[in-house]
Length: 94
Image 1: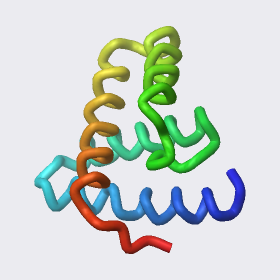
Image 2: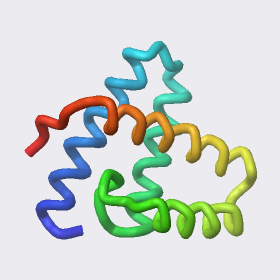
Image 3: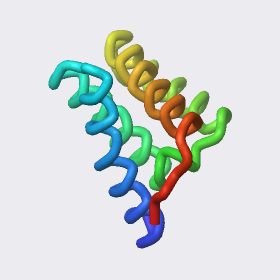
Image 4: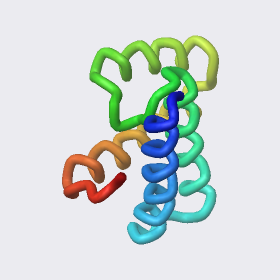
């Protein structure tokens, strides 16, 4: 990731666990959903809010081929939460 993308990722990554905790999610859920963000960002080498529907489809096809179905579902749930939260709030990020 370039510096701007890395800063954007770090900002989003810091906000995500807080949002999950405020929703009453358990620590293991917070950890698994945060891992989904890291895995997606590493796969494309950019911040997760820059992903398109086609990117997500590519990611999940790859994930299905390499991970268990439970890992796929955890990533799907975590990324759904992230994307819904991002779409429902106005960003004040850098």
